[in-house]
Length: 152
Image (tube, rainbow, N blue to C red; front, side, top):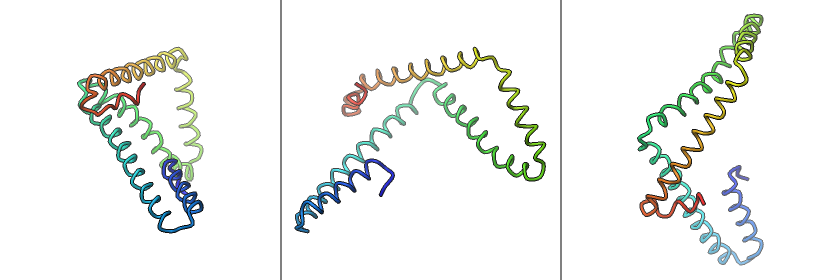
């Protein structure tokens, strides 16, 4: 069974069709129609995803191309640092504990209000970007073939 909900749903439909239609030729015909509709739907989902990526890449907002990747690189760095920390903990566990304690103390020293300000700014920026994208899609509805119906 697939972990992808769309594919899993289509597989479940195929099982139901094979049980509902004992005639193999009729079941095969219905399964073929199901595959065509699945491919058409998958292509539409892919088209929507690609158009959103292209629209963001063409954005004149220079922060868009830097802010999200920079934030993600920080998270990637922190995740990747788990590997050398794991190796270091095998040889010098007291050093790893000291590093972890130092990072914890450093992060706790940042005032809660600053975290709240960051969260509010990040959510506001994300909300405004979504609003801008929605307005851009409305303006270019004919070029995107009615994609704005997804955002209503």
